[in-house]
Length: 260
Ligand SMILES: [Mg+2]
Image (cartoon, rainbow, N blue to C red; front, top):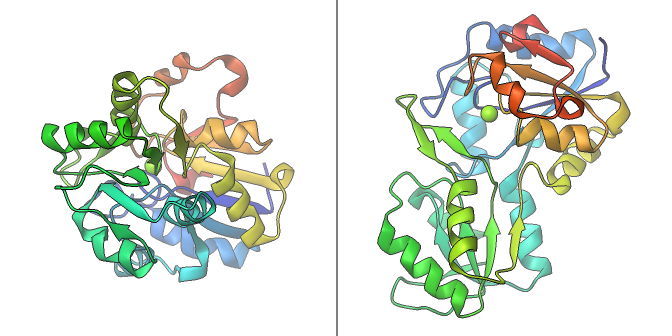
């Protein structure tokens, strides 16, 4: 199977988990793509690193990656929030990104304030119930819910599965009837289109490679891309695909990206 454009997930494909240790064989594989004449970019739902820090971490792990080769949920979230005139945000995510939101022109409201334009939900290692209660109060006051992505779970630096923003969003949606929710990252089309635009490619010539057959690969399939599921991340057994109807299952199942 040959495709001109390769769209690549990061965690579970290039690196094992939040420790950012490379998946065996992934460094040589990615660094060899350009030599093979394949255009590629990274399509990330990362919400714990500033984009520039994420690129730097990947470079430290040995990957030859540059800022322009990363497209992610944070970028589409900024566009989505600006379009909807959401400036005052309740940030329910990694503290490391707090200064980044300010740099991008948003105001993060303090925990004492129930009024904001949007509650923004990302991967949040220290998320606790009082924070979720505050988010519920803000949403009841009319704030929109912006999910940076809707992954079921994520793997922390010890490889431990942790509840993801998709699960948190489902809880908040249940608690606040009529809630308006927007999603910035995969599986929403905007981030895939941004990635293809950055390559000048079209879906029919693109292959998406990810360890998440539900969020990442269903989104890609729905836009007409070919899909490859790798067993080097969240799921080490292809049996998980039984949860998907046959037409949404990936075209390829591989032990790791270097088998492509
Ligand atoms: Mg992944």
